[in-house]
Length: 164
Image (cartoon, rainbow, N blue to C red):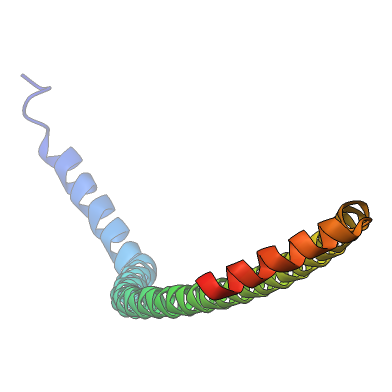
């Protein structure tokens, strides 16, 4: 039973030892420990405050970046729309120019063809006239070699004149 209930002398010495330890701790250790704990608490609060500020700043930066991204997308869409409209205008102008140039070329080609056709027809007519005159001259020489053939030809012309 001695182990369960200590003797009174031992208890007195334990109380004296604990009191001395408590006095030494109170004199030298409590203030530094409490100041360290206060300092740690204030540094933790400062860190939490800084973290809150950083989170707010990040939220602001995120909002600004989203806004800038939205503006950039709108500008990109506007630039693309403008570029598309400009390219459509350029393509349309090029089509009109090519159609008008093509029409001019076709008209010029038609005019050249018509002129060549007229020149060819004129040349053919001239050749036919020359050939006709040569044939007529040869026939006349052959047919009008005698006086009776000449009289007969003149009488035929006179008959044709009366009929017309």
